[in-house]
Length: 465
Ligand code: HEC
Image (tube, rainbow, N blue to C red; front, side, top):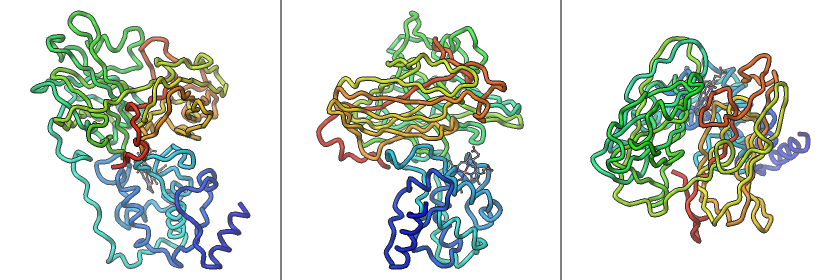
């Protein structure tokens, strides 16, 4: 640390501004307060309020996932000590991806300067200062992050979340019947109970005309942990009337607090949506609750007359996907073990977004592509896996991966007592499910890559909102 601090001091003394852009590798790792030149002598709430409003308020406001608001001076003042700790360790805002490895649109991270400002403010006694020229508190639209939807699809029933203080992983189905076959520009999942719903990964099932008479048959919700011997998809009655399987659009809609749904440039991505179908929630994760409560969530749909000119496709690496996990994903009790999975890219692709997935025993996750010319294209590095923050990460610009490249995933699982999230004490051997059926305590290693076929110039297309 010494040389860094010295440079910073020197820079300050000579009036040079040390770059405080982005996250510094050193301070991201340790919980150290970053050394940043050019901070005000006295930091007041007026200096830090814009940080709380932009980076904390999306979740820490009434009706959202954060357990308390962080909007007014009083709100932050009440939580001063924990706020300092969360910010210094970069535990809040939650953003597991390492920004020194690859960059994404809508990253929720504080810059070194922002961390230093908040810490200095707290350490100087959290003064109010002159807040008269603060811009007004941002207003968020109710219910949707994208505006007024064209149609809404509700879960057919409420889900009762028992107050037994445990995580619950549900598979659920929301059938729909639209006036006609059409195209979708965007779809958004809106939890009915934001404290209850932790995250959701959803796909769409689409029925060909006349293939399914009773779209609403079957259960709406299934506890993934309690359907030990029967396939969840059977209980949900997803099959066509003739017993064949309908078309599936995987990974179509994801939800995690604070993250807006994907909205790509016109003609890119987007979906065909048939008149009759259902949203299939492969994971609807309810966090632990101390009291009985309920949830009924819904989907917002935005239609478009433009067919998806460049439809999105998916590479699914790992468990139940297109490439095996090596060695077989068995994690003996009391072991920390590394696994890999690799897939050759069959054509030139432009990646839009990626979604790494593991469960409770995940410890770290790394994915990159190696081109035929032996160049490495970094995709994502998560040094400290946290199963609670399963983002789908959208790149800032389309990421070109040439034909013949190998996408490689290296993941570490920790099945020791030292892993706070280990569901068993003493630890028990964990393995991946060999059939479609899943329980929380099974492990998984998956990596989803959403892409369109490459066209020259894609690298310049921005995906930020
Ligand atoms: C993406 C949503 C999100 C954002 C953005 C966010 N938080 Fe949180 N925060 C949460 C949730 C959810 C919790 C509840 C605990 C958990 O699930 O980890 C939480 C918990 C906390 C806690 C309590 C932690 C504890 O252990 O008691 C503090 C303090 C906190 N956040 C501060 C912040 C600050 C400061 C920011 C902005 C710099 C921020 N959060 C941004 C979602 C968010």
